[in-house]
Length: 117
Image 1 (cartoon, rainbow, N blue to C red):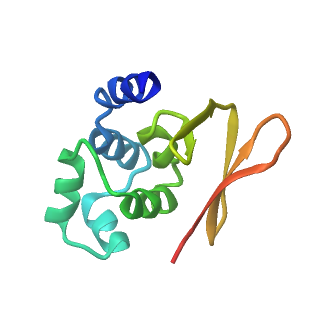
Image 2: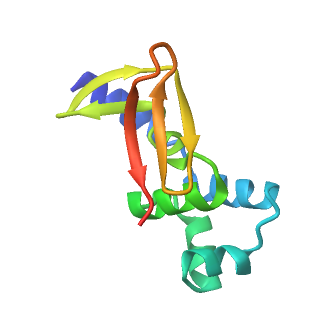
């Protein structure tokens, strides 16, 4: 219960929409281009930029499009299994055409895989 409270405190300061807007801008991706790649309207992209929280499917899609791991950023580097906080691990993120892999930096084991549809 204490860990859950600590995580909620850390997450309340994260505004993922602002981060997505910043990364898109740094990579030279316009709202029109991002809307096209997400298969949505510009209004939807502006809505994403205003959101403090975003669903996992959208985060995965944005991670592929912008080649930036928003999943780890959104959830504060914490990994969960059956409501148990495993650890705050050092990791590497690999972007492929078909998936994103998160590996433990020390032993290179795959921690998570997110597949592009």
